[in-house]
Length: 371
Ligand code: MRU
Image 1 (tube, rainbow, N blue to C red):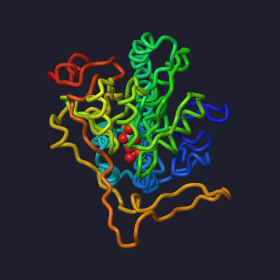
Image 2: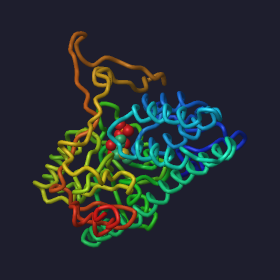
Image 3: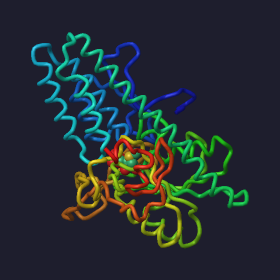
Image 4: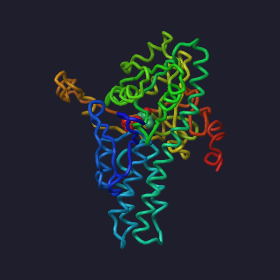
């Protein structure tokens, strides 16, 4: 996507030195646009864990590039053991999104037990990481084209009024290598001249909606309003939401979907108010081995400090962090919740839109479900 007239992805290899991975630092958005150099597996681990980069697709691509850096760090004599150790380190960073472990496993399958010499192994690692990143971007572009049809269908009943789309967290291009999942159809519709307006949930505690989704929409010129996380039910009761589109971090073979904490409550409110509720995801976010999302999907619990403190820009332009509760109040911080498939109108994937059910998913991914 474009930033200040220049085209960017969220992660790439430095042109002048391809042993360095470069990322957009999401910790300082929307106040500062900053590129960071990541030179080691440890740099990648920290960038994922501390959320310099985040979002299911992007942490998958970052893990793949992390395995490429692991190949640069490993020596010939015990290459496989060193790669396996790095794989463990990367997999431990964040547990919920399927994309991360999947990317690491693809890299391992490509690189372990190879007869190639060290230089060739490193080159294979670079090429495979690139394939994973390119495929994430391609999938997201196609999600946009399929999701556009769902937006068009609603637009045709709006008599020239904008389609009001509510989204939660950030599933835009920043959460992937490019384009995004939930926001890709929004960009495709906007670029096609369809009137759209986005309700942006602020997404406590880390405010990905306020800081990232709003920043992306400003950059693309898409009309939007930031709303408190708890406003969705009220807005749906008053006919202010035509459809909900969110991303996902892991979706089971029957369509149960884990996404940022608070998504489930939006789905409940949407059902009660007959508002279509879509989940957009690339196939790398499916976990075809899992069935019951509530029982099986691992939910990350993050540091309580993310709930007890907030940061933002002060009137004099400084970024400050402030405490928002009594000194002795403890907090809990689940990162994700699971929306059962019965609340989901459809899954928007790179292959098309399908019902959130085993049968629906198998109509698009027969090779995965019927194996
Ligand atoms: O904790 P984050 O910011 O990495 O959360 C993941 C997400 O970005 C959201 O859950 C998103 O809606 C789905 S991932 C594209």
